Each structure stands twice: as structure tokens, then as C-alpha cells.
Length: 260
Ligand SMILES: [Fe+2]
Ligand SMILES: [Fe+2]
Ligand SMILES: [Fe+2]
Image (cartoon, rainbow, N blue to C red):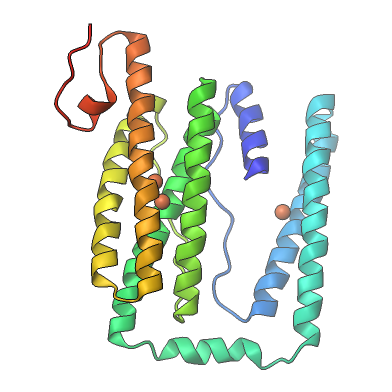
């Protein structure tokens, strides 16, 4: 995420817009195969950054790329250690999982569908908030959006782990194309989205009986309520700087307070 941030900021400083396209994510297969694929990804990234250092030659950017490479090298080491451990431990573990997930009963599939709806939502807003944080001109907006994005990452992690625990596969895909707009339009859109997921998570926690699941969903929902408030505040401040007097309350549909 930090690398995404640094590179995006450089791109924006140069007058460009960061891409939101992603490389292919391998989602099926035994764990050693998946980790080997990740390891390959790190190696390719290192080689690509080295090439870019030669092509660009601008000192600041070369140093930034060197900083990023040092992380990727650490990732490469960590992944190759994990791969080594997986290859030397018993080789039966990987196929067990496949067999388990084949027979998911229908109440479980309802559970998985609900959790995966959350997974897709969280993945979408992570990218949405990060993109607009990286392209935002104001420092305060940037900071706040990054904080919200980190919350959404936690949500994604919790939900995805639950999906795995239940024998499913987390659907790490976006809900659709992410609109790349100005900050104000994005904030308006996000208020609606947060409102929607507050209702969805409330419904999920009513429908899904398992106590630890309900607790997790309620916790996520609590965060989303706060996000909605935070985004409304940012939008109100943005609008106030431009003129007409909006308040957090009016944006959340509460009765207008008199302000003069
Ligand atoms: Fe990496
Ligand atoms: Fe969330
Ligand atoms: Fe949120």
C-alpha cells in the first residue's frame, strides 16, 4: 500500500493519474503453488524497478525505487522461506482444503454469499479511498481517507479469513469499475455507499446466528457508521471553503441547524 501511495504521488506530481488496473491474481490451487506465484511476482517487480532506475536516472526517483526494492527483497526472502517450509512439511495438507470446499451445504452457502458481498465491498472501497487519497490536493482529506482505507483493509481481512474458515474462497474482486472523479463527487458517492453497507451489515448480523460472526459484523458496522460521519464532515468542510453553508447534519439528512 505504501508503494502504491509513493508511486501514485509521483505520478500525480508529474500531472498523471495512477492506474487502478491490477495484475492477474492466482486464486485457485494448492498453497505451495500460490506462494511460488507470489514469489515470482516479487522477483519480477524487483527486476522491473531495477530496469526503471536505469531508464529514469533522476536521483530522487532512483532513490525512491531503491527504497521500494529493499522492501520487495524482504518480501522475496519471507516468501521463499514460507515456500521452503511448505515444501518440506507434509504434502497432504493442500488437497484437503479442496475436498472440504466441494461440499458446502446451502445454509453455509448463504453465509458465504453474505460474507463475500462484504469482501467485494471492502476491496472496492479500499481502492476507491486510496485512489482518491493519492490524487487529493488537500492534506487533511488525504490523511482522513487513508485512515478510512486502513479500516476497510481490516474489514477485508476479517471477512476473508471467515470465508476461508468456513471452507469458501474470498472473492477479492471489485463490485464494478471504480469511478475516478474529483474529491467532492467521490465523497458524495461514498456517503451513499457507506449508508448502504451499514444496512447490509445490520441485516447480515441479524440473519447469521453464529455469535462470533455477529460480533465481527457489528464491529465492522460500527466503523462504517463512523466513516459515514467522517466523510460527511470532509464534504461539509470542502463545501464551506467554497461558499454555501452545509453542515454534517444536513448531509446526513438531519434537520438543518441554524448557522449564521
Ligand atoms: Fe512486495
Ligand atoms: Fe468496511
Ligand atoms: Fe467504510
